[in-house]
Image 1 (tube, helix red, strand yellow):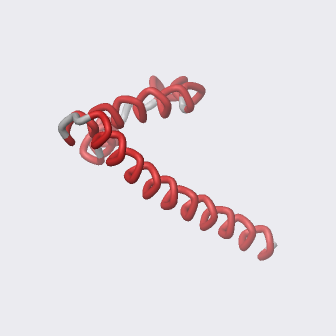
Image 2 (cartoon, rainbow, N blue to C red):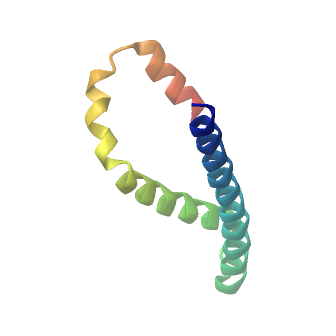
Length: 83
């Protein structure tokens, strides 16, 4: 039983490392794109956020069915404050 938990923990660490690398690489290419196009940095951040919003929204679409079942206002408040 201990082995399954250790393997699960290793997969979390691998996913965290992949996310960190992707975050760093994404920032590099964002800066390069902003320089190449010549737009202000805030426009680049806005564009990157919009793309991430659409992609993550599509990837999490199957989880949207559980949203109406959450009726606790404190849960919604924590989600909103968490940003």
